[in-house]
Image 1 (cartoon, rainbow, N blue to C red):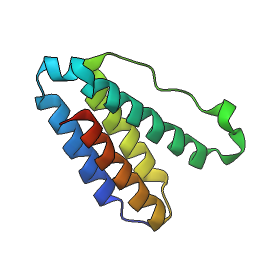
Image 2: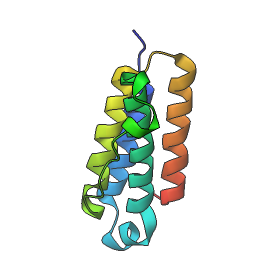
Image 3: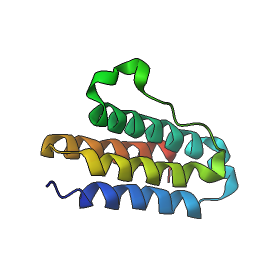
Image 4: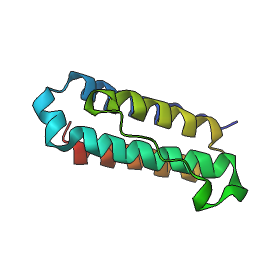
Length: 106
């Protein structure tokens, strides 16, 4: 089993920073960047769980509002961590989270 602690740690750090961010920063795009990343991670996890479903079988994470973005990111990141089996994919996922944090400015 692959140790996905680096992904969990990166996702938790991003989510914690979002939770601590002022509303103005969330409104300026931090929440939107987090939701975009959460959707990417969620879609990736779904494709790994159900490889035969294809792109049409991926359910998009809804926009639950800027104050829910941190929780949505946490759920998506942890879901992906459960199904990842490849170390290269783990590295890629962590890089995606780090890049998303930079885009969000938190």
